[in-house]
Length: 281
Image 1 (cartoon, rainbow, N blue to C red):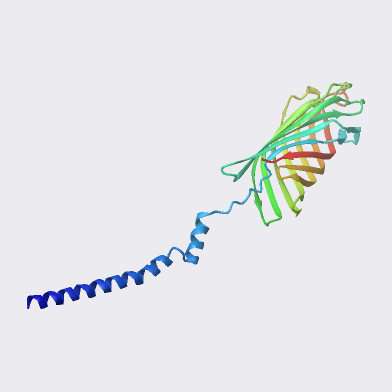
Image 2 (tube, rainbow, N blue to C red):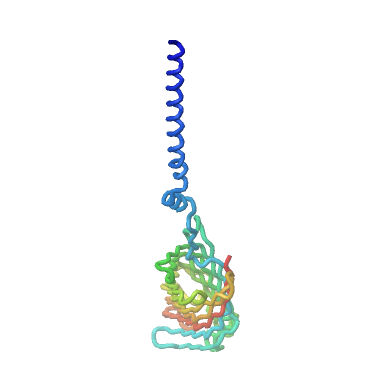
């Protein structure tokens, strides 16, 4: 009887082991299929591999040659008393642009300087001028081909003349803001349109006969076409127009022997062709 009972227990153990083995074999394909689920793997890969989008900020260093046709006018409110139109071949520009805060903001420094000659009559000069811009801003890409860059900051300009007859030496400081629209027509060709306006009410280094600065402003516009020569080098060709306007009170610049009670309006307009090379990091 004990032998029969032992045989029954042995058979029961064999059945239980067989059922356990079968259940294990059935569950193996299900567990093996879980890591190879295509939907799950695609979702995991999307989260694990981010897509890197290049910043629309035009970072890099630019060096430009700007031959300029300079037009200068001086007026006391009774009509232009001095006018000069001369070609200035020795003018240039250097610009450095970088990014801040993980490529979210733009920082830019720009200096433009060169020849500033006028006819040797009344306020004729054989001098130079220099303009400095320190800007901060950002850029956004509205589509694959169209981007907008906006910035604002400080602007200063100083004009120094080696006087032939009462050259106006003066500097101004103020705030500026600008917008640039860029459209890429082809993978290697882009066109841009640039607008800038500034108010420069703070004078410095001005000669006494100019009088007191009452108002000063700047306007600048540029149309440019860019060609990507290599992945890290581009050539820019464009037209640049800049107008500087200043008004003074209590001036005797045009008539040194007269009382210093005149209004003086100075207007300088620069028509420049720009040829630059830009290195991108």
